[in-house]
Length: 119
Image (cartoon, rainbow, N blue to C red; front, side):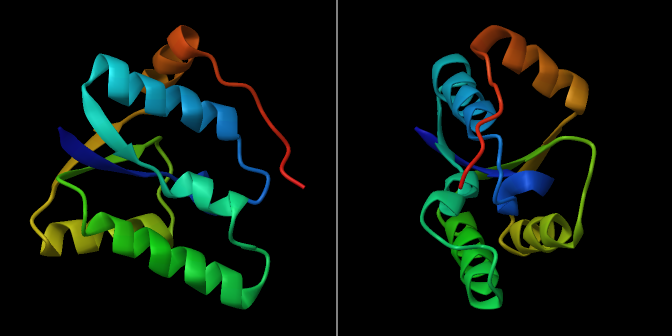
């Protein structure tokens, strides 16, 4: 199966909408037949609120890109972290696909996705 790295602006948000990414992961696996590589779940194990945690989270995410066959960028917003991830994917010659907020909304209508507050 193809391995896809998912990039989006809220991947480093400590109050991440985790159920949104569970829904997107299900869509990727069941509808697209790919294995999702989702750095969004790093917030469950890495304290991203500290400088050291933020750096470790960034390094962990970049490391995950090396295992991917493709990168899928989610949403219309792009921050510096996403731009760095896209640049790394280009260097590694990994195919990049972009999904708009509208496309993400369609996925969430099918698979759900509600906000979960991470403490």
